[in-house]
Length: 263
Image (cartoon, rainbow, N blue to C red):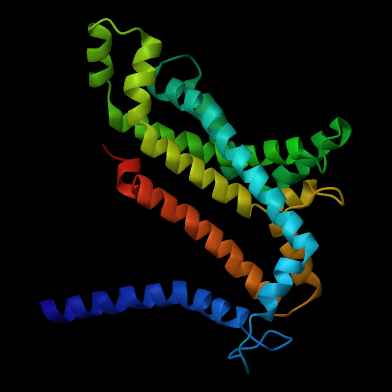
């Protein structure tokens, strides 16, 4: 009986993994298609669509903009998220629950409603189709994740080492920089990487804010897929998957996922 249950469990896990990774495998195969339209299996194999993507000015400009915005958002997420997480974990002040809920509110609101509200604020302020506008909009979506990760990391650290350092005469700032901050490195790296991925892949908010002067890669992919159905769409999907996978590997190789939420 135990062997039967074990076999069924393995079969279930295999089916789950197949449901997740089989569509990705199909997309990768279609990206190497020699056909002029989306079809599976392809009638031939070619790298021409990859060359076409690299030669497309709109896609390359969108990629450049997405990388710049994602980099800025990851840094700002840490700069704003770390003090917020510290205040929520290490201090007790009136309205702490309200502040926590306000920070998490963008995760509850429908993204399209949030995008419309941001557009109404940005239009009179002249922030539409600008780097500051896109950075601030993406920061609204990434900051809750950053705060939650850093809250979990801070909660797992405890205060024993910090109290020991201060009892030996170390001032609070030096204690934070030399004792607490190194221990926070896994959470900081993970937060920055996740913020980068979320910003790079964000499309709903970006659709409300981009314009002819400035666009992002996901928006350019959406516009292209809305008008055409050829393997270039699959190539662009593979590009997004590859960039996200690189970021995940950075986290795993540098700090490991387990260390992000445990000591």
